[in-house]
Image (cartoon, rainbow, N blue to C red; front, side, top):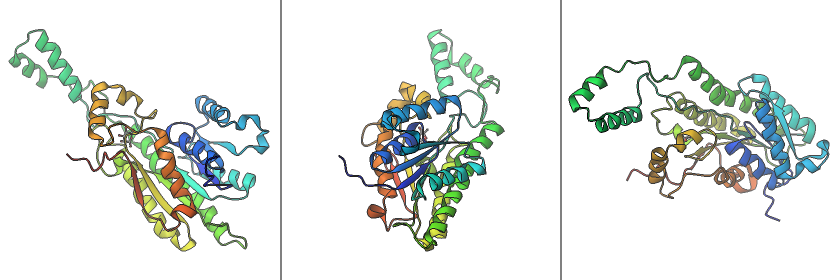
Length: 310
Ligand code: RM4
């Protein structure tokens, strides 16, 4: 049996039934932890949680004896984080590790108008149709500014609500519990580890992510301040910065061969990431034995993408 680096640790994770969250939740389970998995509670997420029960073998056990449990709710609702923490305390007696992972990213142009790619495709079509350069230039400047939806106020607000406001509410609820544990007469072996899933996009921009990158920069900054605020209780707060990891968030984006090849070409390790690549770093930051003096840190998990200028 692989080393159980999180034996009987109580862990909670938001957005834990798909992508990076799912991989970390199942990874923690495989290291001997108890895991409370938050998801939105829509039929698809409920189904995805059921497949996690099967995949982990926990479905064979009585519900009360399982090491994994679901907690439904939108992280943008301040009550969801509190509910998630309460479930851990009532079921397993406390909370050791909290992973703020829930996030959304719908690729969208910042402004209306045709994207670079659409213009190129259009150009090519016209060139093949033998249209002159003059015709094409005349065409270019006459394209009405209504074709491609830009980032709407609703999309901006909902992205911030889930990615940043949700992180704030859920991390605050977890910290509240960890502080009260650290001041109780029987404190837990380690005061607690809080992990914020930020992104390489906290450090660099994305032409179709102007609503998204500020939220990831926000999560990184939130974690840095939490490290300052909670250090006196022995609680550690660190950020993981995934690069381009293949998940449901970028499936459509990376389906575009041009875009995928461009990303792969920019990554020194030569491939986009798998969700499993996030498990080791998440176990490292969760374990008081492995990272007991690590707090306020940001760990890129990107195959070298960030540093690769040339
Ligand atoms: C990440 C980063 C990746 C993108 C995903 C959706 O934060 O921006 O490049 O594919 O989000």
